[in-house]
Length: 189
Image (cartoon, rainbow, N blue to C red; front, side, top):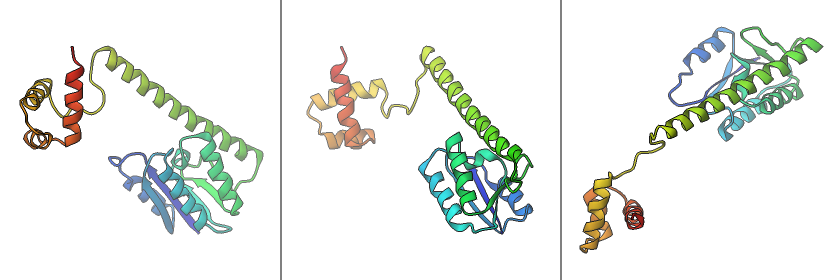
């Protein structure tokens, strides 16, 4: 039986292209999800796949990095597939572990190394971009719930006797946000 595995890293990405390729390749069952290759959810999906496959099955993926983002996780998954006496076939033809020879083993390791390299390069570029943005004074992360002016107004209202709950309703924020804002404004010089 041909069993497919499709994965995209974020909710915004589209699985449909991979699913179509796997169906066109003859997959009778397809495991898929929208999760990072390094996430626990990906490990769970791979575990479901491994539990499902039987001796003689062929696991199909569109690209090797769909199995994971680290060399270790990719090689572990391939090893688990082989322990079930199944094989792995990558649609683009770059790898078919049904061909049990030294060249195939070398290709598995080489493809895994390049998947890990790609992941490391992405992390490095992301970190560089973050540092460049910080150096330019750009705000990273979630925007504050209240502007600086609103924070000052909230503080003055609290000093005038307004309750935390009343302030939360007035500014449409949680009570925790009111407490954090008061603490932050109090620390300012």
